[in-house]
Length: 391
Image (tube, rainbow, N blue to C red; front, side):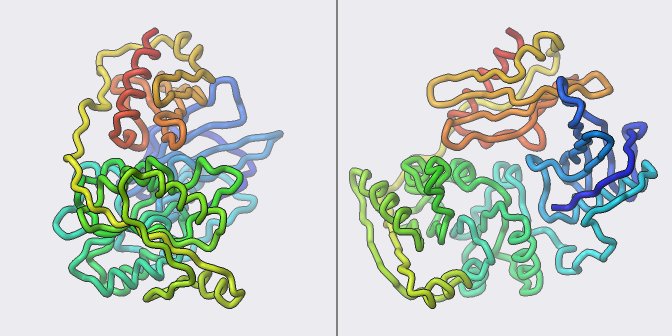
């Protein structure tokens, strides 16, 4: 990811704007002098730059939790801060090459708030989880212009590459999202989706709780799928196939097809390589035959804007974990802004797929960069969080 090694560092008179990037302040990690976060706003994207210091060395890069796609925003912010502060760069990987013209149009790249506020329902929907090179996703979108495709991926270079191809091909039926697919599925309207593709997910043999396929994911897929819709898993992992088959068999009523070494319309470069190696490829296709009730959730992620927060009370929460039935809230780190605001880095939600985000506490408390996905568990986590803030 983009980063710069600096000879020295100093702050700016916030807020300040340089080359179209606005810097709103700096957050100091309370208890750790080697980490600071700089709030940046670039072309509608809010994120942090992370400053790491150690024995006179300064490293400025994107904060992993909030870094936007494509990396253009981060590069622009890094260069803008260095220029505005007059800092000397010792080394780094941020060049002055012009932005790829095929990344100038980023209309196909949505964020989770876009989907939460206006989920596209104008066409039948198909979703691909972890699209990688995008070969399958792009092929499907080109072959079915009357369908709305949503590609979900967390690998930034893959997102940029597919965004370029969308713009080159002029596709208007394909949207991309940089987010955890397990969480995303929980806000998809019921009975809407025709297909959910999960092609060659990471097996996570040593961390099975991180697998995409799980009883909860299958349950949310059934709710989101229209009657006659399909969830299609494709994997080269014997262990993942066996685990997934067992997961599907836990359903009380299902229609599942199993294939071995089936040929499909388009394959990935990895699949081509595995076939040359004579490696087995498995497909599990689950057919949904049920109609689900509408998605209905009560509650908001609002805060009382009249809240005032005691620093001693807040600092005592740092490192603590609150557990409740089905989920938790973990106060990972505590920060203080120079303007008097405070901030927590949080993990919250269900144990097996928590969200990681920040909570800024000032005149208008808010989650950063966006609120959690609205689910029963995250709404309860929000309620528990509010109780903890006030004791």
